[in-house]
Image (tube, rainbow, N blue to C red; front, side, top):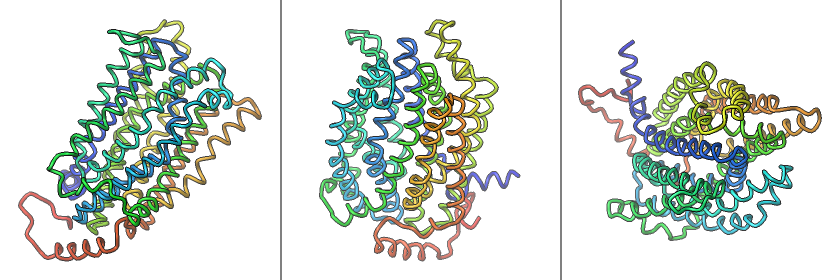
Amino acid sequence: MLKRLRRWWLRPCGARTVLTVAMPLVISFASWTVMNFTDRMFLVWYDIGAVAAVLPAGMVQWTLAAFAMGLVSYVTTFVAQYQGAKRYHRVGPVLGQAYWTALLFIPPLMATIPFAYEMFSWIGHPPELAELEARYYQVAMLAVGAMLFSSVQAGFFTGRGDTRTVMIVDTGAALLNLVLDYLWIFGHLGFPEGGVEGAAWASTVAQWAKVVWYGVLMSGSRYDEYCLRDAWRFEGPLFRRLWRFGGPNGLQWLLEGAGFTGFLLLVGRLGEMATAATNLAINVNSVAFVPAIGLSIAVTTLVGQELGANRPRRAAVATWTAFHLAVIYTAVLAIIYVAAPDVFLVAYGAGHDPAEFAPLRELVIVLLRFVAIYCIFDAMNLVFSGALRGAGDTRFILLVGLVMSPIPTVLIWWGITSWSAGITFSWVVITLWTCALGVIYLVRFLQGHWRTIRVIEQTVIDEAESISELANLPVKAPAGILSEAD
C-alpha cells in the first residue's frame, strides 16, 4: 500500500507534479473566492436587495464576454504545447495574436453599457432589482478590457507551469479588491458610500491593477527567450490557428455561461428571497468549485506540455491524478454542506438582523443539499474538460455546449411559466444538468481521441517526436526517483 501511494505521489505527472502546478492556482482562485465571499457578506449587511442584484448582473457581464474570454485564454494551451516542444520563441507571437483578438472585442462589449437597465427590465426583473443590476453592470463592464488582457498575460505564466506568479498577482489584486470593497460599499476614509456600485468600482480597479502588475513582470529580461517583444506583431496563420482551436472553446464558454445565466435570471423572477438564496448557495459552493478550477487549469497545462513533448501517457496520468484529488476534496465538502451548513452561513448572518436573516438561511440550507449532490460531478466536468482543452479537442467541447447549454434554461422557463414551478424545481434541473456534463466529458476522455490532437504547427510536432525518440535511449535514473515506466 505504501509503495503504491509513493508511486502515485512521485511518478511523472503524479500527485506531487499536479499539486505543484495546481496549488498556486487553487490559492489564486481561493483568494478571489474569499474576496467574493466577503463582498457578498458586506452587501448582505448593506442591503439584501444589493446582494440579489450582483450575481445576475455579474453573470450577464460574464456571458457577454465569455466568447472573447474563452478564445483569448486558450493561449494557455498554445504556450503549454510550445513549452513542451521547447519552441520558446513562438510564445511571444501567439500572445500577440491573443492581444489583437482582445482588442477586437472590447468596443462592442463596452457598447452594451447604455442599455443595461433595458436588458434587465426585458428579462422581467422587478424595477427596483433591475435598477440595482444595471448600476452594477455599467461600472463592472469598464473592467472588460482588463479581464481580456489579464487572461492573455496569465496564460503566458500558466502555460509555462509558472503558476506561482499567477498566485501572487491574483492574491494581491484580490486583497486590493477586498479593501476597496469595504471602503467603497460603506463609504469609509473619504470614499463615497457606493453600495452595489462601490462593489463594482472595487472590482474594476483591482482588475486593471492585475494588468499593470503582469505587464511589469513580463517586461523583464529573464523572458527574452520567449520573444515577448514580438507580441504585437500580427501573424495571419498563427492568428487563424488560435481562432480555429480557441473559437470553439470560446463558444462553449459562451453557451455554458448563457445556460447558467439563464438559470439565474429565471430564478430572479421568483422573487428577491429566491434570488438571494441562490446567490449565497452558489457563493458557498465556490469553496468546492474554485479548487476544482485550479486543478482543471493545471490539467490543461500538463496535458498541453506532455502532448507538445509527444508523451500522451503522462498526460493521462496527470488527468486521473487530478480527478482523484478533486474527488477527495469535494466529497469532504459535500458532507459538510449537508451535516454542518452553518459553518459557511454564520458570517453572512453576523451583520444582519437574525429574524430577517432566518428565512434566507433556511432556504440556503435546502439549496446546499443540491450542491452536495452535484459538486463531485462538477469536479469531473472541470477536470476532464480541462484535459480535452489541453489537447485541443475543442470542437467536441463546442458540440456539447450546443446540445446541453439550452436545456436548463428551457426546462426552468417551461416549469415557471407553465405550472408555476418554484426554486426547488429550478435547482433539480441545474443539478441533473451538471451531473450529465461530468459523465459526458468522462466518456469522451476514455475514448482517447484527444491523444492524437495537437494545436501547434506540424513542424514543431515532428521536432518534438525526434527529441522524444532520443530521450527514449536507455539511461539510469537517479536513485529515489521513479521512471516513467514505473
